[in-house]
Length: 95
Image (cartoon, rainbow, N blue to C red; front, side, top):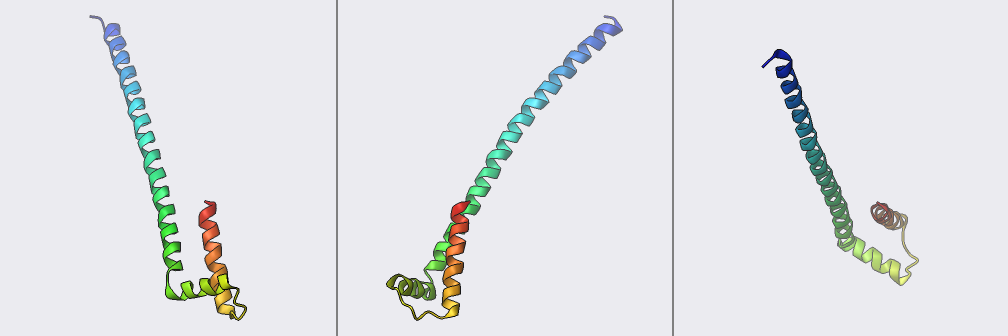
């Protein structure tokens, strides 16, 4: 076997190694993409749970009841809390 034959065999093995590496890289990229999507979904769910739990506090439950009944005697802090609660809901809903 001549030196050029060995070089050809080495080049062939090198080509297979590159193709194998690219295939494994493709699988790793797909797995990373799925992992990133699941982390984003988990973050969205956590934000929703936080907002829903905030709505169940006694203060916010009372405020929401008064708002639904059309109570016009709300003070500035209560109005601000209601606007902040609605803004947080819209921001999470939009994403």
